[in-house]
Image (cartoon, rainbow, N blue to C red; front, top):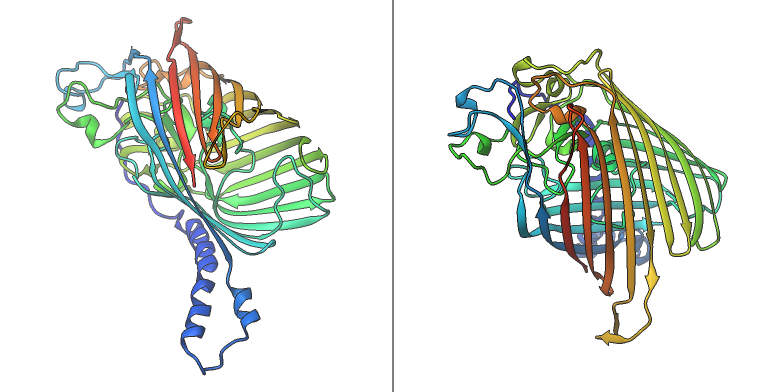
Amino acid sequence: MLASGRRGTGRRASLLRAGALGVLLAVAPLGKPLAADEKAGEGERPAEERSALLPRLIFGFEGRASFRQSDDNRFPVKFPFTPSQLPVGQKQAFEETVNAGSHFEVSKLILTVDAAWSELVVAHGRLDFLDLYDRNPTSSGKQTDVKEAWLRFGRQTEPGLLPPGSGAYLKIGKFEKFERQNDRHLESYGLVSTAFNRFNDAGVELGLDLGRHVYLKGGVTAGTPLFLRDPNALAGDNGTPAFLRPNPDPVLKSGIVILYDTEVSDIGASSDPQANAALGLRFADAGGRNAFDIMAFGHRRRLADHVEHDGSFYLGDLQLLRGPFSQAPEPIHGDRKQEVGGNLRLYLGGFALFGQFVDQRVAGLPRRGIEGEVAWTFDLPLKWAVAERQLFPTIQPAVRVSRIDNRFKSNPISPAPSFAWDWTKVDAGLRLGIVAGVDLTVEYAKNDFVLASGATRHNDEFLGTLRWKV
């Protein structure tokens, strides 16, 4: 798959600067007390005042190593690429599995830092030194990425817990979308979470607790641009220089792709910021072990004419939907992108349920997604211990079912006919705690889609992940 177009501009930078400002505000006080201590006799502050300026810091590290077994699939596309635009020896373009077969790989290395001046002033940063499964395009995306960087004033209550009373918070920087499921029980993502809220946005967010049970959220963010990726582990190479090299069999191929919201930090500018809003109702016991939370949400923005993506000459937003060289446009009209939806969370002891529904229109193209995950955590009896830590403390089976219905027909010569296919994905797996901070997740994804001809095909994948946290 290939495309061309002018590079996007950098007008989104103002919102990203807001995120950077949050980090600077969080870090700046760290140097002030040190400078005061070094200048003895020059109006030294009292010890209690100096300690109030210093935040409490917590550093963390996380790594993941994976084994992946991916099906091998290949689907021809009708777009009339010229021979110079195809790999040597290839006469037709294909949508095909990114990297079929069996592979061992280090998939993630993460450094986090949390800073707290009080319960009401906190900051958080996350740096991914390696994030193989979130890079897009996989081989040429950023090796190192600031995934999160935000500063928060006020109290933000996590799902499954009740606040002590009415309150508010303001968050500035780069952070997760408020409808995203952050407590996934498998390493994979569902179709809905991949398509709509996998990646973080940048801007400002305001939350209000109206008593203990009703809450509101709203904000203005940059808006994550529309792009394309395979919904299995690896995103695939699309529009990367590696695709154009004289190699009839590239190591990383295009993937069998869906439309999705990509990484905000790697792109240029959208024409308008995105407006976000949510209304929720929650109930929980004192410890949050049993809880119910339901939330309605919506997002709206104007699509950019084109958005540059780091490492690829594919352009996002409207130019992506117009097709390569604007020769195979999807049946679009207008430039609005909006989605409305709802979340449901239920916690009953070790049982957890998450459900999400999204109804989206992107430049007039309608599609809907629904996703549900159930998991149950069982505490295992103490049989063995290592360094005074229980060996195999927990086991956690989980099943996720997700579906995307694309209610439009793709252009017959589209280089990505899979945009319009209907998809169903079932992820089932088991997470075994090995010792505190170390676990192993094994899972299988049954990924089905319906071609324009009506035939059903599969692009299944097995994934095993060893995760450790420090």
